[in-house]
Image 1 (spheres, protein in one colour):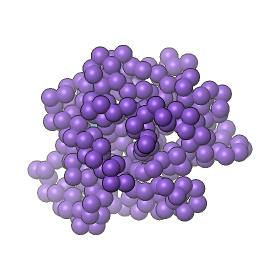
Image 2 (cartoon, helix red, strand yellow):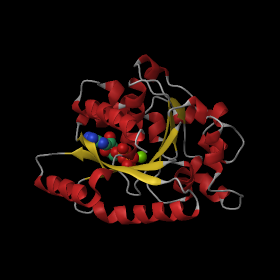
Image 3 (cartoon, protein in one colour):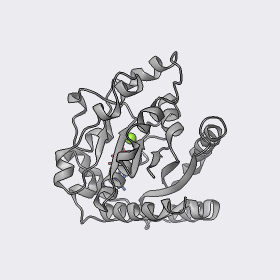
Image 4 (cartoon, protein in one colour):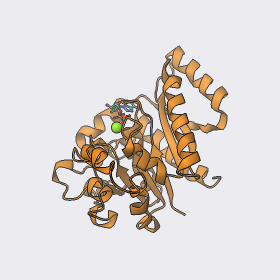
Length: 261
Ligand code: ADP
Ligand code: MG
């Protein structure tokens, strides 16, 4: 069955988009059929998948307002297919920022993405949703259709603080809107083992959250940061890099983990 996961954390710059595009590419590389949904008006996941957000005729905005279906709006990126990691993309651009306001008066406003994705779910093993850095109506649409949430986080002093808000939101959505929603796991990203504080926070995470912490750790790796400027996930841009390899291992961990869900 198709698994739908949100990559969420209301903090910005914590590695959500990097995780979404590299997990999508990693899953594609190990033979999974993947749709990547960009739910952030910044459109970074769209650009980082080799799709020019300014040239898109249809985006997730049209899907949320029900003027297009996912089947009509999804696109492919030739660069990804050429790199052996092809996945479909439901792109976003600045237009999406308006959806927040426009959805307010509409019915089923938090369930729009859910209905839209249901029509194409059979085409995919995984649907990954890159959430914006807020707990907004857009994020709510993501959480309402997902089976689970993947939370990328840096092992820093304030990391745990933001987590409380996210966990509370997930609990509320679980109670009121989506009984299936669970935290799949916390992913340690941009990890630098030479920094003692990061090791300490990493240990704290493991003792607090146990097996909710993924085994895979994504290292801080400059190739992952360089890749978006070439319109590619690191997994395609430099497959031999430590960061790319870690995301492929993470993809394999996800494939294993969903068997236990
Ligand atoms: P978010 O989507 O949460 O705002 P991004 O994925 O855009 O975060 O990451 C923020 C910045 O950190 C970007 O410039 C990205 O290239 C960089 N980055 C993300 N993960 C890594 C990593 N593992 N190593 C080095 N740089 C990273
Ligand atoms: Mg982002």
